[in-house]
Length: 218
Image (cartoon, rainbow, N blue to C red; front, side, top):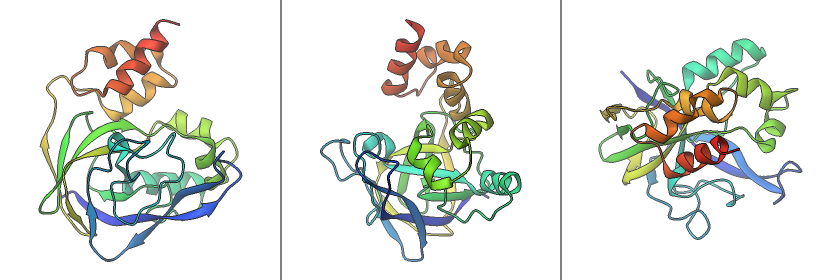
């Protein structure tokens, strides 16, 4: 059964890796239920979909398409073996640490029911940035993360609700001709031959379709 291992909220931290000087990548597990809602547009909304979470750089993070970030415990465990260090829930900056769900294999446009009322829709893969690299403090982290292609998934909020550790995750719907999070990530990083799939696949966000069009015209 797929379920939420931990719900993680960001703590504001100073960093030299971000142009705004602060980051909310330090996500820490909380025990109490958290209300999740659509945060609105990136530039004018509340940032994160999770009440109490911190999004500092609104130019590149947050907003309706990136309301929630999920990462699989199975992938964290794999990374833990590769890096030789413990990786607690939230350490990749994810809001939901999941178990029993292939997040990389999730389809863009796929919908999940989390707990009783919350419904989320898979949108885009996470693209690694300098802030993530500085937080992980691993040499060549962006290149390594990109090569492995286990990016985790951003989600939009379809129906608001509460989420807590232990909540079940049920896949409600999957696009018929969908593109997986892993495929989309590889298309815009190391495998440009996959870019045409982003133009034709069901459920692909307009942002990623535009990204594919721009790269195909170069």
